Amino acid sequence: QTKPVLASFAPAGGTKTIKSPSINKPALPNVVILATGGTIAGAAASGTQAGYTSGQVTIDAMVDAVPDAKKLANIKGEQISNVGSQDMSFEIMLKLANRINELTKSGTDGVVITHGTDTMEETAYFLNLVVKTDKPVVLVGSMRPSTAMSADGPLNLYNAISVAADPEAKNHGVMLVMNDWIHSAQSFVKVSTTAVQTFMSPMRGIMGTSNYGKNEFYRVPHKKFGNKSEFSVDGVKTLPRVDIVYGYVDMDGEMIDAAVKNKAKGIVIAGLGNGNMTKAALEAVKRATKKGVVVVRSTRVGTGDVGRDVEIKDAEYGTIASHELNPQKSRILLTLALLKNRKPEDLQRLFEEY
Ligand SMILES: NC(=O)CC[C@H](N)C(=O)O
Image (cartoon, rainbow, N blue to C red; front, side, top):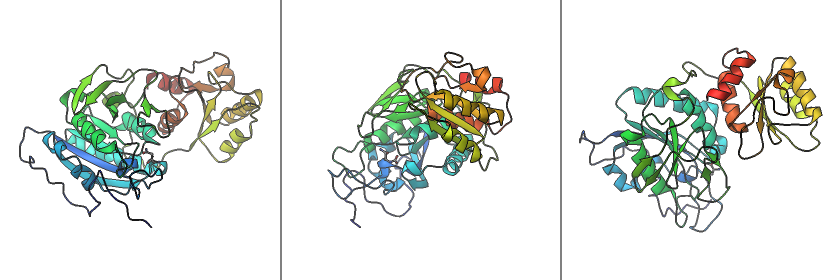
């Protein structure tokens, strides 16, 4: 195995307390960084190598690479996990949510979460629904590993800390700060596999900007989150199974039937256009909903609202329309919704309010 050359972040050491020279100055806000892994903590053997391993650099080394951040806040780091976010799990998300709820009840003014970009949408939206605070909670990642030429991690981290430390960032729900933009967890999506400018909020636009730690906010999220959210993971250990089935030309109902057979409590269809699907798929959906499995119609299209009863009569098939939520975010909302027994009207309401 090649030993990583760390150009942008200092080499990974053991766990140590991050020394902040300003720790006793009460004027600085207290920010805790919860590290989970991802490219921002990734390392390769050279600065121009496309392949690399996620989750190699510790939180201490990442903070050491942005010494100026210590002028923005008293910073403490905690390593929650160190995985590529393709291996993010509900177990880690629950750990994160519980830790954020604990921290924000005590002396912490803001929380930053370092995370891989692949499943950033899911973790951010999950936390947006279950953290109970009006304090800033900010996810951050990078597209280039710490060893790359022009690595984007250090400045992204600096900006994320500046947002977490900013009193103006309160009451904006869970945010993502990357490449100078501040997004709402509800609205952002990953649009490029490799480009630094990978996150967009195509339906609602960004919430603000963060430019070398100077922040501007243009809007607040339009949907419910945080203290106003009815969801809670207090005491929750496991979550119900929800599968996603992708729609395509000539689709039959077999994958939907398989999800039911595998005991999914919910199925999200990444449908065609406005949440449409073939007649064969619709018949399988009817079989599923008759058995009490909740089926949400979302879309494989990148933007747009999946409306109720446009081409498919939802009451006839027992389906729920996802509105603005893409399949992966619909799955998060449905998973949390299914912690309780709910009627179809109530489930449809959730997809309008969150
Ligand atoms: N740019 C990234 O963070 C993607 C790398 C990795 N697959 C992850 O999500 O952790």
